[in-house]
Length: 320
Ligand SMILES: C[S@@+](CC[C@H](N)C(=O)[O-])C[C@H]1O[C@@H](n2cnc3c(N)ncnc32)[C@H](O)[C@@H]1O
Figure 1 (cartoon, helix red, strand yellow):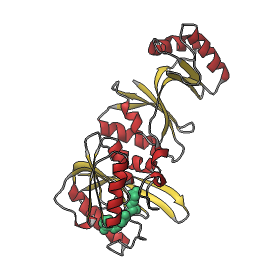
Figure 2 (cartoon, rainbow, N blue to C red; figure 1 turned 45 degrees about the horizontal axis):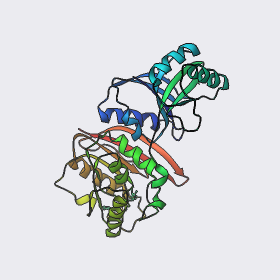
Figure 3 (cartoon, rainbow, N blue to C red; figure 1 turned 60 degrees about the vertical axis):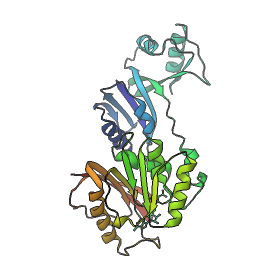
Figure 4 (cartoon, helix red, strand yellow; figure 1 turned 90 degrees about the horizontal axis):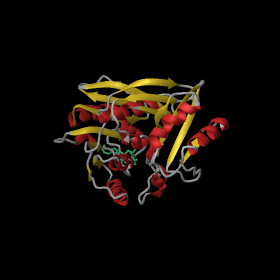
């Protein structure tokens, strides 16, 4: 099945890395069929009919099943009709008026009902450098706005935006049912996204007020998780599938080691004892880290510019 992803322009590499990480996590084989970096279009040949995973993605703006690769609208209409026949209504979306109207008419001529406001199926036609991709839109149902930190019962300014939190979880290549640990959970931004994606969540924070707030926030979204007051550097006797965390940036009065570099290294060493073999560790730091850490292989590193005094570094490790 060919799936087209219209990627967000928020970062040059992260949107594509996220799509691939989710596929790996779900155990779905794929190959790259087409990519246009300028238009931020990625088309993958996924060796499965399962496309539910697209709902997990945070940096994909639109996704669709490619129904036709033809530039001949008669042929496009034949191929699209095969997929959407029997649907209650449809709309063609395309930035090119001619394609939109001509394809709409061809499909309507086959007895399908046009509904531009609330169609059952949406056909997206995207012209990338003279190549026309006609896709059946897959509705992405992620509701980030309902979960921005200020809408949660417990708020703290260090909370991650749900989009970033979800991205981090996805980079950890997890699938439904896996156990994810955030040892610096704060208000629970990461745990909320992980829980909503069907993962088991576990969190710790050294600050009791954060622990209580995180529990409240999880409950608010109907989620359950084990959250306790603990020092992340002293955790033991547990094994999880992945660790995903936004580490303290040094401003918190609870930071238990004033030397940030040594604190991060001590935690990374600890985390390699808490994650299962072949499991992933995704952590966000405000600075570079010497990544030579026993039992952890660095897979990727990304920079996310926030403002002039903060660029987040996202490190992705695999436990070897
Ligand atoms: C950057 S915040 C995490 C924000 C979180 N991702 C959210 O969305 O709310 C870091 C958290 O680490 C906690 N912390 C600091 N030192 C800690 C330690 N040694 N063990 C556990 N938690 C610690 C702080 O209390 C703070 O809540």
